[in-house]
Length: 308
Image (cartoon, rainbow, N blue to C red; front, side, top):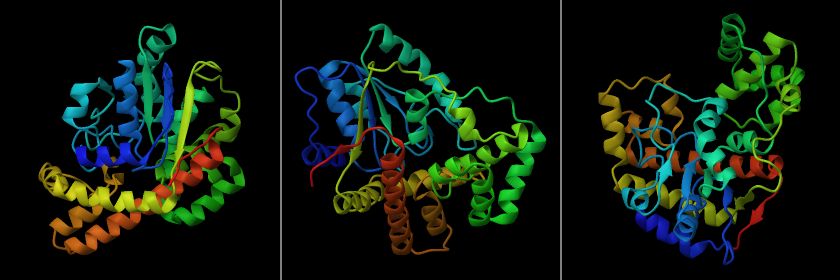
């Protein structure tokens, strides 16, 4: 994906000044150039790049998740990439616990750190904190998941709206994990997840970090989404999915949320032509990028506008 990185560098300009930030939070939608900007920061600072993208946590699909290349990793240290097996999923709390040692080192001044990705809840856990919610029992968890399955997302959102409208508004479409999480918290505690989260203490002290939320021109971003998926196909995404299927991929595994995976697997099985799979995956990627931009605009405290 090196060519993709070069295009990003040319198209996006953020003035890091002669003294780049010591602790940088770099968030934004998929295909907006975050990884390339993080690498540019690391070259200038000698710092560590820490992944804050839930899909780049998976080890099996580095091309399909646009993980930094081996060349990039040779230039700067990258951490929390490729940690999870296909049937695993990390909560925000698990990600935060894994990230904490690197964050602590940056806050002590031992190293510079760039936390980069598109998973907004990871960033919210840093700047707003993570609630100390009581342990959720199996009964509430099972009831929440079964209710989602029985009702479907649209009706389930209506149910969640009645008990936790703030969570309903901020959780993006197709995010079954976080929708059911919000509902199971209410079932278990009788209190909205959003209320619990208002008691949070920020992980990062005010003034200890520099936050950039990328918001590129929409047409430019959509073109990048389409081009990047074509580059993924050229650089082995199909082979990655074939290997994953050969290892026993199941439709209910969390890795199935990776953009393009379902379409490519359908193509391999003969249920969809390559052109149809390509078009659908690109459309879903554009839709996801749009939802991310809306979420960041509504939820994050600052937004960095980028030129066309």
